[in-house]
Image (cartoon, rainbow, N blue to C red; front, side):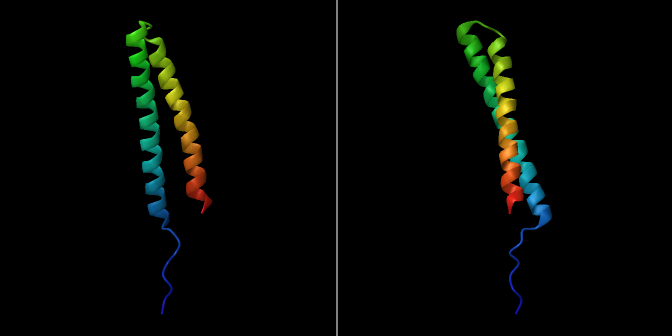
Amino acid sequence: MEEPKTRKSGALMAIAATTTIGTELAITVLLGFYGGRLLDDRLGTDPWFMIAGILTGVGVGIAGIIQTMQRFFKS
């Protein structure tokens, strides 16, 4: 009898990592954008909080990408 394969397929790992990274970055940037726009509308500071929100979203997204890459390639 053959033992079942316990090792993950390289192609499936690449697809999972790419999908996770893209989704994570898109969500963080969009949350920063819309959060910044909301603050700009309420405080009348157009476009400063939107810009800060986008940059914060990119920073948080990059930190999340680093953690995701470490998690995917740890095993």
